[in-house]
Image 1 (cartoon, one colour):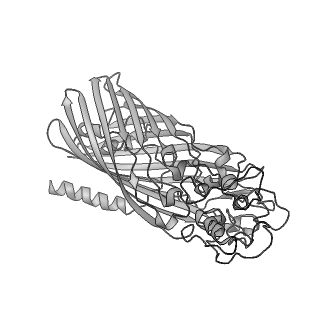
Image 2 (cartoon, rainbow, N blue to C red):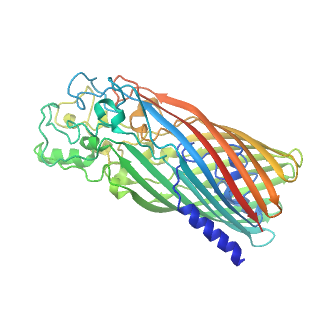
Length: 499
C-alpha cells in the first residue's frame, strides 16, 4: 500500500508541474480518460476503463479496480486569423471607418497572422482504490486551457499589433471628445501594454471521488472538485478607452482628465482557486447494455484581480457546468459501441458569454451627446470590467461523441471515434475571439491498449480536428469580415499499473 501511494504522489507532482493547454470543445478537452480519448470521448460516462473516466462520471470509479494511470500527450493547435484594416482611431490616414480589430498583415492589414505557439505537453493522472466489493475512492488530475496564443506585432499592418498596441494614437488614447484626431493626450492616461497580443488560460482540476453499488447493477458516485487557474493577457491595452474605469473617470472630470486602468493588459500571470461538485450514476442493465449520467456544477473561482478592468464583473471567471449522458452496447465480449452526449454551459459565465457591445453601448462620445455612430449609447455596465462588459460571446455547446472498440485478443484492444459540435462563436464576435479561436467542430480519433503484463498496460491515442473557420462583420469590425480559424493534432500515451 505504501508503494502504491508513492507512485500516486509522484505522478501527481509530475502532472502538476506541466501546463494545461487543451482547447477543443470550446476550451475543454475532447476527453480526459485515455481509453475514451481513442473513441473521441465516448464511453467515459457509461463504460469506464481507467481512473480518468471519473472526470466524466464519478460513479464508475468502482468499476476499474485498483490502478494508477499516468500519461502525457503532445497537443498542437494551429491558430490564425485574417485581419482587417483599422479605422481612423487606430490609423492616421486611408483606413476604414468603424473597424477596430483584429488588425491583419500586409499593406492593407487584411492578411493572415499566425500564432507562434504550436506545441504543448499535456499530463494526466488518476488513481483508484477499492474499499470493498461494492465501493471505491479515486482521484484524478485534469486540465483545460486557452492554448497560449502569441501574435507578434511584427506580423501586422504597420507593426501596430493585433489590437493596435503599438499605435501612438490609440495607446494611450490621444484625443479629447468629440474630435478623435486632435492628437492631445488625455491627462492621467498612460500606455497600457505593447503590440504583441495573446492569452494564456490554464485550468487545473482535482477530483476526489467516491462511488458505491447501492443495488445490484446500479452505482452512484459523488466527487468534490478543487480548481486552480491562471491567466495572462497581452496586447489589449489600446482598449483602455472602453473600460469602465477610464470612461467613468472622464465623465467625473468632464473630459479634463482620466484614469488609466491598471488591471487591463500585460500584467503577467494572475491566479485563482475555486471549488465545485459532481454527481453521477451508472446502471449495468445487463451484460450487453449500460447507461450513465453525470452533472458537474459550475466551479466557483476567485476573481482575476490583475485583469479586473478586462473581464466582466471585475475579473470574475468561473468554470462552466458540464453534463454527460452515455450509453454503451456490447454485442459480445470483444466488441463495444459507445455514445455520449455532453453539454457545456458557457452561457452561465459572463466573462465568456457576454457579447462584445463596446462600440454600440460603451460609446463615451454618446455620453456627451455626440454618438460616434447612429444609435450608439453609453452604459458603463457594458464597458470592459462592467457587469455586462465585453466577453467572447460564446454560446452553450452540445457535443455528440461516437466510439467503437474491438479486442483482437486478451492483450490488444483497438479503438476509433468521432465527435461533432457546433462551435460556440458567432461571426459577429470574431474581434476578441482572435485571442482564443475556439472554432473546432469535429474530432477524429484512433486508439489502442496493450496489456504488457497482468499488472501493466499501455494505452495510445491520436486525434485530428480539421480546420474550421468563423468570419463575419460585427459592431467592432465595421463593414469588414475578419476570419479566425484553427485545426489541431494530438498524440498521447498512458501507463497504467494494475494492483
